[in-house]
Image 1 (spheres, rainbow, N blue to C red):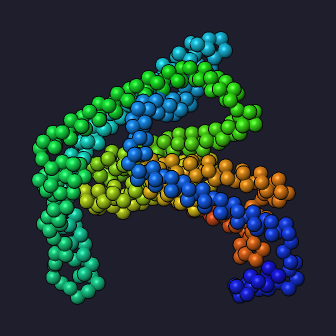
Image 2 (image 1 turned 90 degrees about the horizontal axis):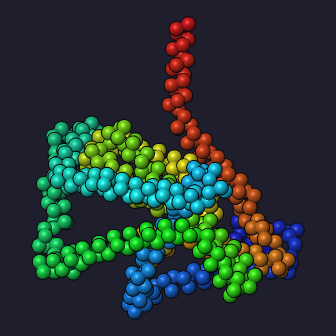
Image 3 (image 1 turned 90 degrees about the vertical axis):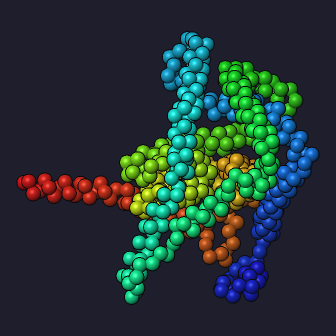
Length: 481
């Protein structure tokens, strides 16, 4: 019997003498479950192998890189059109909703104009206001880093001496950290220009002399000019696609109807809808979420005077917040180091504020904007970010969650279709082992309880100051009476 066999392997599970033998349907369910798991692992391994071959094959990699360079303006245009379409629809159906039926062309023209103005205004604010301020903050920080090290080391030594005098018999003041040695170590780590060109930096950049530096400068300049040209051309292509999106959609549908059957067309529509919901909704919401977090972080840091480089800290936290799961940690650690060096008295307040901001983002703002659009577990999210980040860097980490959401959803739909064809249940709860310590209902209830308790704790923490203020006000009114 299956239960007795499992009991011999794991003696902690008591034997059920009345357990029925495994039926043929249960065997089929178990075999199907193993096939689904095996297929998922094979697809994941195949994806990794293909990505590794492409990344390490010079011929294939060079060919794809050349195609990418040629198509970059088109790619930029497609991305801009895709991300700007909700803005265009907002202007068409909300701002100029009364013109949609009577004057559709005028409505489209005005909406396109306002969308272009909004995009150009965003670019203008970014390049003329935010980026110069960021560059200035970086210059000031690099110019004063020596003074910051001296001040931080003095504070740390003073704190350590106070602790030693309080908790031990030590009465002499000691210099636990030497600021001169620390600055020398940092200088050696960075290196002067000669060592940089001759050492690892020169190998990395291919610069070993002034001639190489001049050549590299021209290469960088041409690359910057090319990137600007691609971006401008991409904007033109993007707005052309927005202006004629109905015609492009009709052309694609005409080709699909001509070359594919109705069944295949329905399947293509289902997959495209899934990809749009997973990628479009997630990326737009994540960008908006990161923008709000960056602005909120800057305002809060300004209110509490966290540092002289609040715009630098907020920009770094906002940009890294685009990366799911790991983004807050990537943003908090280096910004925390900057605060520790420049204003160590505010480091604990900085840590508290970052935790509160991330809790607000993870439990209030993020779920409201993004929701549960991905529909995958935290384990799959971490696995997806690790794998995609290893192969494709930061871009892979950003796109990991929607990519795996599409893959898992397609595999799940195919598996459920095959199960239904075999007359087997598609509910996940039917596939829990009867002798497992946690059933499907208990697992679901546990997750609901954890989320509810976490929400209650966050609400209590955030509402505590307001409750205290209300209580003090009531007591003052009572005294007045």
